[in-house]
Length: 107
Image 1: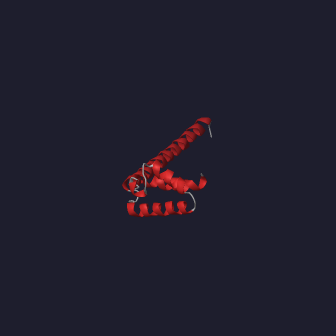
Image 2 (image 1 turned 120 degrees about the horizontal axis):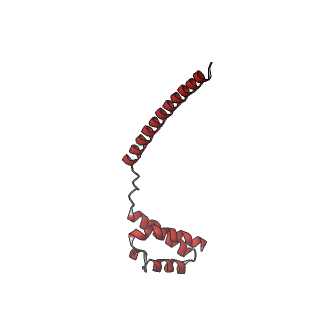
Image 3 (image 1 turned 90 degrees about the vertical axis):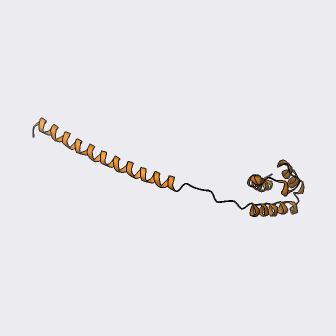
């Protein structure tokens, strides 16, 4: 086979490979668009919080720490949230208070 025919054949094969690559890219883009549409359709919505259950859990944790001899630390922790007692703590602060109570074990 002459060099020209060989060169033309190589170009044809390269062109076919490029066409297959373009088709694969188009398929990939379509799949990604579908995944993106499904994700935006099913946006994560955090579960609704039950303030009463949170309050009772925190009350239980505070009692456990106080019983374990950390009454001063419990009182100081409530003061950090501008409260004298749990009823004075703003419900939006319950999550932070919970983790602060857990941290008392490591203080």
